[in-house]
Image 1 (cartoon, protein in one colour):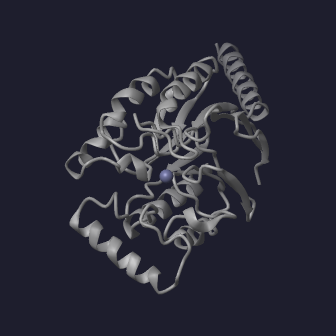
Image 2: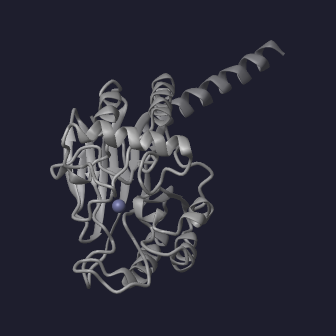
Amino acid sequence: MINRHLFIFLILVLVSCKTKKETEQKPIEFTIGVVADCQYCYCEPSTVRFYKKSSNRLQHAVNILNNNKLDYSIHLGDFIDKNFESFDTVAPIWNSLKSDKYHVLGNHDFSVIDSLKPLIFKKMNLDNRYYSIVKNNWRFIILDGNDLSKHGALSETKKQQTDSLFKHLSKKNRPNLKDWNGGLSNDQLAWVENELELAKKNNEQVGFYCHFPAIAEEPTHNLLNYEQLLSIIDKYDGVKFYFNGHYHNGGYVKRNGVHYLNFKGMVDTENSTSFATVRFIKDSILVKGFGREPSRNLKIK
Ligand SMILES: [Zn+2]
């Protein structure tokens, strides 16, 4: 009997060793879909934005994304431009994605009449305006850059905080002090810090998604209080990337080893699209661009 127990014990040890070795050898690899600034509305085009074309462009992107095995897909904000009804054209297309799907709030998502603003979150399947996704040893932090903004501050408290932020920044004469930009409340910044502490404790790598850039060569589109966010990010070695939209020409900045990548806007140009798949492997983030979006190989620090 003792021999039999010893035999079973040895088998279990061998099996657990093998499983451990296999997980060590195989890093978790996965791919996501990324779309920025679909910005659909049934409106006449501006010089560069072809709003009506965005529904077909989104359908085309969804068709391609559905041919890939994706962990999830994310839209980086400005899903619509004007009019609440715009959601009814593009939401069903986005919702036909086979993968899990998430939205980031952009300034134009609030381009609806005030009384309908509280309803946009449900249209975008959002339980919270900012939130995190934890999977595959990563923590993905989704920011709401409209938290303190002229268009997106919905409560009296947030409106007052927005006024104070604008007043404070107007003394500094900043190029990004625009009504169509927005900032993060102290509540949200404290939440970000808490998320980063949790990631550190759990040994997770961290990526940010926000509509607005935190740093860019062209600074006019930056989050209003981007410096506050960067000073928090700087303290945590686990942060590897920050993806955003908003500035439709796109751009890329590397700061302290963190990749700050601005995806190009889908709505721009008469005849070309823009979106990407992003593959996460052990030491790199591989962006595969479609249309105007360039492909990139970003080494994880
Ligand atoms: Zn925007």
